[in-house]
Image (tube, rainbow, N blue to C red):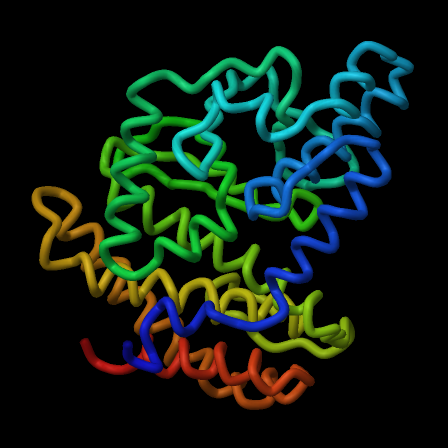
Length: 296
């Protein structure tokens, strides 16, 4: 296996232990029996947030559900090691934990429709085929599909630090495009876990111009963009020759755009990485960017 393979890039010691320890602490707070998988880690944060919401609303029955529920109680929502959600827009939440809408698993959560499950399975298969299966299993075990879009429409996706392991994303009918966006958001979740696992603290008052936002961004946001877009470039390059139809020009445009963005970002990357105290983590981000800017 190449030292620059996607599997090697995300194989960073300490992350799994961080996830297990965090899950164990949440289980102790809730008083339930959570396991030690990446899915348990993601679900634990849904349960914790849900319990807090229920407690504030003085909803004793809902609070009891969040305190007793485990991953084994959610198998009706699962597709292998992933939970797939497709909530109606009116069920999305807005609160102080996020500038964007989000969703929490709850007692009334319904299984995603078969077409949504099929799309996610196909996206996961594509990601796995091109070396990103571990990333998605470990850092995107909960997939929340939002709005179905046409390929020419804007696709929005995001992840929340309060819900690690969960990805919120719009989608099209093309599994390779969904895989690209799942990889992007899983990369954000990976980097958050890696920073926490290695006790890396980044300064909030140091900024770099982000070509992706067109505005100055703190070191944290700048490095997040460099890392996440690097992985999407690696995936798109690997799958570009197997896609057909309208996805071909869509992916070509993505690669051209990212080439321009990285050309601008490279000027600041070394300085931004100097604030990352963990050598192994700094090396992963640097290698990913280097691979992304190399010619295909």
